[in-house]
Image (tube, rainbow, N blue to C red; front, side, top):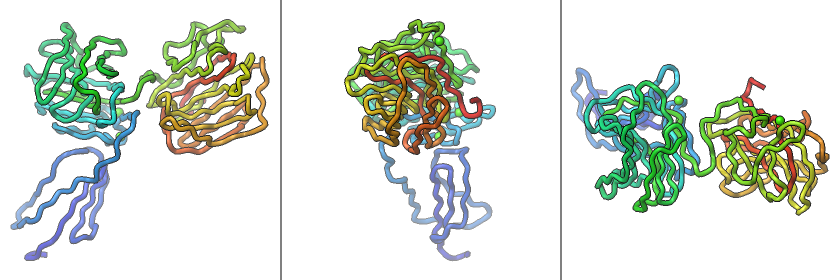
Length: 426
Ligand SMILES: [Ca+2]
Ligand SMILES: [Ca+2]
Ligand SMILES: [Ca+2]
């Protein structure tokens, strides 16, 4: 209505945009192309007066717990905070990726907070071009406290070197430099940074290339930094210790060539031994033995393995089974047979707390014979099959992705023919 004051409110929350006039919702839309940025006014051929402009930020989000994984497929970098630059999710030939334009002289975006201390951040990045200034750089931030306090592990194309730098109270200090390095344009590179105590380690393609030690910053989030780069980022994960990333599905191991290098032993003395064929084994003297494969990008899958128990130690907690949705040694589901109790069980460990989700008493798994265990994880549903029969299932929403593993306590067990397959390939 001309000549009258109206209250117009626009709300941007995730991918949803809403417009209110005088308190009434009049328009809503969903779009994920732009995930950050300021506000403004536009008018065309009109005489308009504006007053009492107010911008409210959403309430402070809850602290993020590790691990986190972001593939940008839903168009949103969930939980990431843009420090500077025009970060957004773009389409890279059919797969969404994170991006800030080459015109940004400095672009930084971070995830996590001061509750993060020891962790590993991994990212895939592809360099499509550079601004051509001597400041051009790309890399990873760790122990990010604020724009003036963090560590940066970066690649500098003009100097063709990798650097580990510390920014403390706004002052940048070079801790270590590796010259003679060139990241090829147009290809996806995998960078990883591990921070543990005062040690900072930079990895390229899983191999350590540069290390520094510094104790000025003990905690803080993780992030990305670029200066004058035309660069795409994807498959960013941040996790606590003990998870090998980048393992493709399906996964298969018959142990004939020794265990696959993709297994990540959490604890226990895992080796291959001969039992007809080569089989995977941890000794009965290990009171707990766990070994895992896969990563935070594994969601739904079917895992199967042959298992033979030769004998139990008989110390009151004899068990054998699978781990699924394994995220770190404190977050996963166990689907197992507990011989001491004579039960099949499904149990959740969440942040170190165990919760029993399902139990089937009166169960037996005869010694000295090969049995086939199968776990199906589909959304919130978990199923355990023994020799082709469904014995136990549970529904739990807490852990939606993560790798697969073998677990045994106080037992002489032989494992063989491990198959992990994504839905539709079983
Ligand atoms: Ca992606
Ligand atoms: Ca997302
Ligand atoms: Ca074998």
